[in-house]
Image 1 (tube, rainbow, N blue to C red):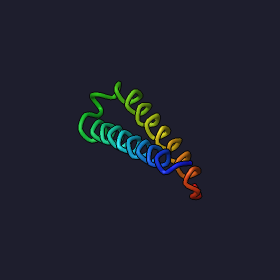
Image 2 (image 1 turned 180 degrees about the vertical axis):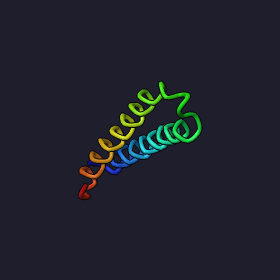
Image 3 (image 1 turned 45 degrees about the vertical axis):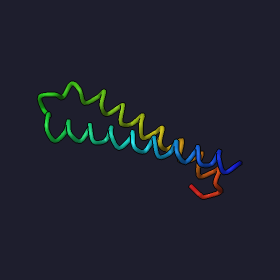
Length: 71
């Protein structure tokens, strides 16, 4: 794998980590500030947070495998 391809994978990991962090903050804000009134929003935000974390995990595993690091 070329350095350019590795940098692209690393950039994808960082992007997915940022998105997962944003979703986690959204979930935190819901829990801290808006429950129990906004309980109906909980499943959607929780699923979006899970999906964002799963996307980060997949991208991170690809990067680690490509860079020769152990996951």
